[in-house]
Image: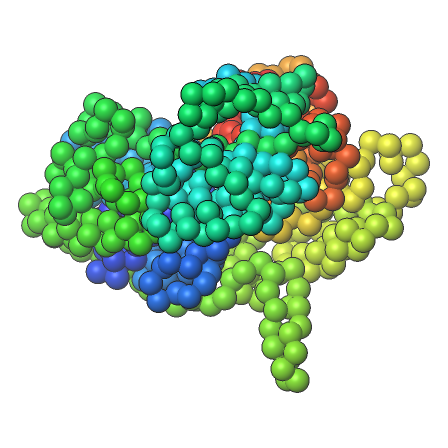
Length: 549
């Protein structure tokens, strides 16, 4: 099914969100397509203090406000992976795993992802000591030594952040000085728990199954680090980014490094196609420059769209504002009581419940959420979550199983668990262990939608691949609720389990199941374990997971 818009924004980070705000406010029909999580890379930043007019916030909150603002003006959002794009015609065509979408103009704001350095052992120990996201993985290294590789803004910022957990942070910088703003560099240099090594680089990381040593070269001499307590250490790589531009190679002008070439108006080498944010050639990659790019790209695209209306004799369609979008919609937040004290509204705010209604109303079949509980504190939290889910939809039924009540079955369940059961009370193959809050709440709701609703669209060939699997597999996914890279893998694995008769999937909140961390030597999330032996780290889509099966 094809859907037509005035403009399509590919990428839901600050640049794409700003473009959506400007285009929607100009009364154009806007679709924002984002592969993973609205907000982009900045959502993993715990503290933003240099965005004009905002004294202190975090990346998630900042971009959430941008998203709500875009929705308020009428922008639409879709989580989908772009498979191909045809951009050389008056009508642009964007093919995704959720359908084909067409528009008069496109803003490309796909950003960039962390760059791998290529030192010996980097990929071997990824997830077992080598990491790329301090927010996601910093807690794993509490009380341990940590090395930060890089001399740019991200390296400096994350080095300071990691002091919250690490015993000692050492920053390894290839150049003679930091390449970021002096104010940021000075904070690192002055920090009592940070040690900086200039004109240095990592050469090797090694160990027997887990990271045990690292070799560095510094000003012509080689030295080796081994932790005294043998409890391990961490290496966080912040060596720049690789632009997400492979889809556009051969259609748009790119630099040798893959960055999108744009003019002063953010126009690319094709009419009606504009670039914004970290994918573009630019000297400074910050939120403030990303939103500037998005604003310029959108206002430039407005003129192009207007010209296309005249050329193609199109009639402009009305764009309706969504005033509910500006209401608070955090999944957990506090409210003021009459006495002025903070009171918890609960796991689901009233705004979230209202936003859930359009999704829950689309459920076509009954589904049972079986809450498996024991006497632990986290089970009490899960029971509270159950009480809030109960009654949200006539299609959702909540039942409870206490540990010890089902003879012979307890050994098969790791408590607490939320198990999805179909209309016939048969297990649908997927469970969540813990309270699905944070970034995983959307994943949980989408699992319900896929199991009991029309479901997200999926390529027929992908669905056929799932149903052709004959060998039984059990998949465990260990996540952190603060990790922006986990939901894509969680949704992929849940969808496979729901569609397959032989695949089962258990999702675990790492904070409540430390035994899994020790069993599989997990030092990074997301972590996927297949059949209790094959361990894989990093975000993955459905096709990638199927490839591993």
